[in-house]
Image (tube, rainbow, N blue to C red; front, side, top):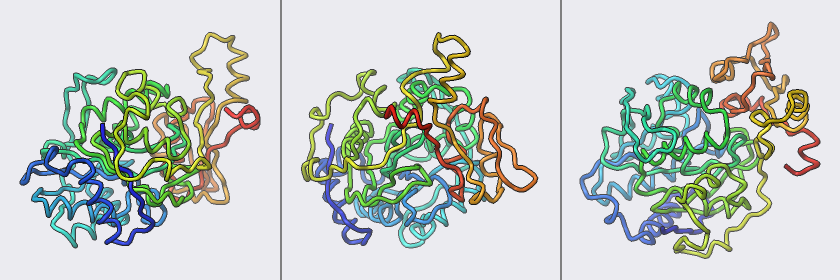
Length: 381
């Protein structure tokens, strides 16, 4: 598999366009993947209503440059996403506007997806998901291109190209998957299965300004200054993780990709552009969502489990000074264990928490942060 790595230090349109154009050439051009006249879905990471400078979503300049390159090649471009929350025109159009996608559609010949139906897809390649519910926009296009954002993730440690494809699952269905698949490794397998079903022919990653720390929405913008591209979303994630100091064993998705034989060693990737060593950022701040011990499913005595769960597991914590009682977290919680108190603050019932961190991920005020117990910090788990 091929992976292109090129420097880019700002969202100046000409710089981004040049880096993406060279990235495409490094992968052999569009010709091996897309035919002129084909309808292509650009699937960005549009997690929620976030301004581009917050680094939680794929930057609109990145999307605009890639859309124009495809349009110049002769493809037809659709931009589409299903972020958290109901998959409805009101919510999605609000996200499009806030993240800069509406402006892209006005400035180019790209169009925004307006199909809010769902469909069932058979997935024979899937390990645990042989049949999937996806947004029907996948049936309106000939090819899918993943346009991810380089970010850390409180639950899955890292979110890149593979997890970006989870945005093709309609919003409410995502919560069902979180509820029914709480184990991290099984959840990683589900994400891989979704990506296999979506089958993006090309994957790009906006790593010009990434996100570190309390990602994927409440972290800190980090100048990573890299544009990544690959003909494999799986190897793209492997390269991006290496850049920010994460190994295969650190990231549940990479671990399962390696165990399933989808990826191998880093030196199996055919790198083009600049050497990966030029982009290494080992000091990237990462939150690991769970102790390596699978406590809840272990054969430990019940009292030991309770003690370990209390002292070793991370958990979402509401910071009352920042919480406005908007109830976005309550609506997002798959297990419905969040209530809004009389003084308009979110309250989490921890014994039933499955640590999916949907509440933290979608909190518009960044009022929910991931707390790592002192013992976990001391043990460096």
